Amino acid sequence: MPNSAWKNCERALAKRLGGKRAGPTGRTGSDILHDWLAVECKERKRLPAWLKAALSQSIGAAKPEQLPIVILHELGTRHDGDLVVMRLRHFEEWFGCPPTAS
Image (cartoon, rainbow, N blue to C red):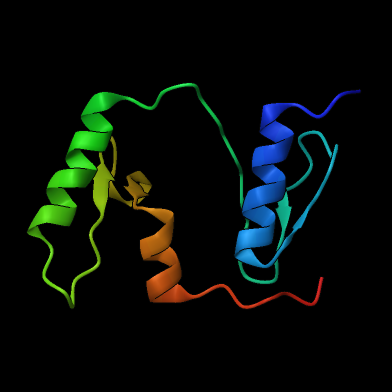
């Protein structure tokens, strides 16, 4: 089977995060094996413009000591299920991704 874009995406992210691509595990685990992250990768041709605009707004408003994030809330649901979105480079700067032993 030829390498598809989503497989290449998983490989690149695994390398960047210090993990290992899990391979064809189906629905039984994360896309990337890592000591402290459970990573599910989703690649799309385009991400929603409103989402990128919200992240740009957060980045523009952030002070140097602040982590810019967007919180996505679905009307009528509990806030503990909200989603947090941030740029990967900001995640790496704040939390780091040391190589794993996996």
